[in-house]
Structure formats: C-alpha cells, structure tokens
Length: 196
Image (cartoon, rainbow, N blue to C red; front, side, top):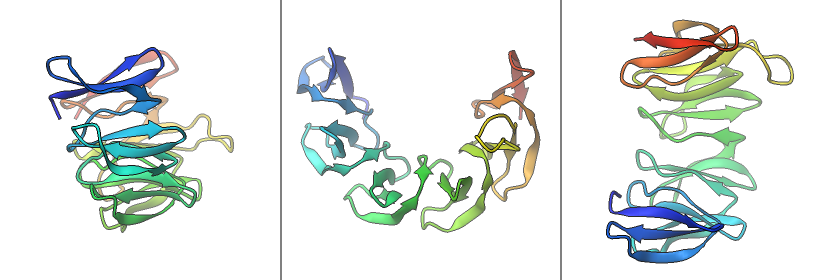
C-alpha cells in the first residue's frame, strides 16, 4: 500500500499514513513493508500480518514471515517453511528448510540442503540441486554450484525456468537482473554488469 509506511522510533516499529499521522504507535519489534494490503509484523517472538488500520488480520503465530507476493506469503513454523494466502490458509504446507517469496510465478525453496523452485501449488519446477539460489527476475534466476561442504565458494550463473543454464556459472558473486542488467563479480572485487 502506498499510503502506509512502517517507521522505526528507538527500537520499536509503528505505522504512519501519507500525512505522517500514526495509524499504529511504535510497539512492534519489527514490521515489514505493506504488500498486497498487509504487513508482516513481529509481536514478541511471533509473526503475523497487520491490515491497513493496524489491526491483526492474521494473528501472530509464526516463527518468521516474509511479505506477501503474488497472493502468498512464506511463513515459518516448527515444522518448517510453507506458504499461506491472505486469509491465513495454508496453500503449501510447511515442509521446507528455507524459502523466498514468489516471483514470476515460482519461488526458491531449500530442501535437503539444496535449493530448487516450486509453483504456487507446491509442484517442483526445478528440483533442488543448487547450493544457493535467488528469485527469478526477468525470466532467469541466479544459482550457485560447486560450493564446498561448509557452503563457501562455488560459482554463480543463471538458469531459465526449465533449470537449463542461460548464463554459465563462472562468477564469484552475482545479483538478480533488473532492467535487463545484472551486477556480477569475478576474482573477488572485480565487478561489472552484464546485459540480457
């Protein structure tokens, strides 16, 4: 929502409207930005979702929560990460070690120490085989392969939605594409941009 903003005062977050008036005074440990009409907020050690008036629309019950994207939010329970809709109903049951938000209709999830991609119904688009992975942007996603047993090193490249290499893994570090460009690094601090 463009007319609400989370504001930090001291060590507590609140919500203001476009005129700077408090909708909700600073009382939360953390509040994410409003996405799709709600904001993930932390109350004590649990996360839930606040509506535009500052009232809970999904009560705090999750260990952690990401913002809504494409109608779903990733939330963590004691069973793992899964996805809920804006009513708090499970759309993908909690079973993953780690997740990101949906982007381009699919989301990164980690299962058995490898990252892959799922649809909004929880079906695998690209099975987990990468050491690290970022969200899809502009039809490709950055993924890392060949990391050591501690998760260090390896090389980054970009895959398409079928899991095929769009740009081979030759980079030490990468950022997702934006406006046709992605920042990439080789040899540590030698960085530049590639165009897709």
